[in-house]
Image 1 (tube, rainbow, N blue to C red):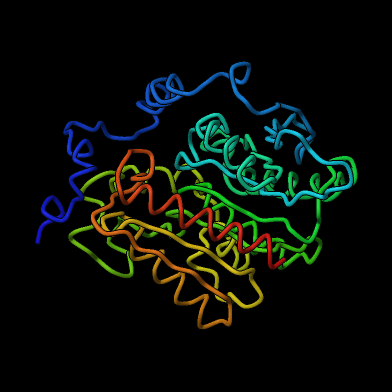
Image 2: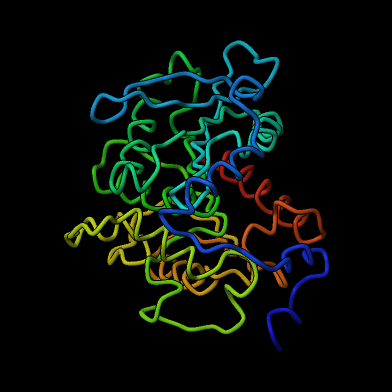
Length: 314
């Protein structure tokens, strides 16, 4: 069957034609159009604060706290990384979701407004995330958090950064991670190119296309030569050693361009002795969970249950 025949009817709005090519010339207009759909920081339910990033530049964080905090209770923490192909986006793109999730889990969520490519190529966005992780642990008393319950979470490119951040945290050995929640993560810089390990005629046809994917990876890399360690932090699918990574929840739609790389990553994690929960949702393209539908409801429930289990077991 063709991708259009496999698409869940709830996601028929994805079939609108005419997506423009992603280039350095079109990126400013794409950013302006997409960012116009988000709340401003002043309108958001999260609290903005600024810390110093690697290199001395300012880095904005957005904090979401549950209401009615009880004295003496230490909160789990979710470090959240937004999507946007590494080239656009901000915490406010998930503002209501993160505020509601903090309340539902009675957790503190720290969302990172990491710097974007191509202006800030690898490893700057990843180091911004690591700086935030260090900040969380340095402020565990003032934040009233449980340092044994720090969870990494992200969507799309943010989930790819979360996967890379887990590897950096493991390799540097400074901060323990309880688990990671990767929602259709962007993991493999080969996807959408002839170098992809697998070609699938039903993925990437609807939703996030190969051309945009390759453009974004090129923006992040910026023609850098990367050594063996750096290549695994840049593109987590290329990481040779997946041992000793945190328990992982991974979800992806069956029509997503990232299907092959995500399932392959989950299998490799399992072979490396990492606890894995993998969900593949039928008829679902990339970013399906931003639209109402039965599959979206199931996905939201799966994520919530996984987070609750992780918090309870950490």
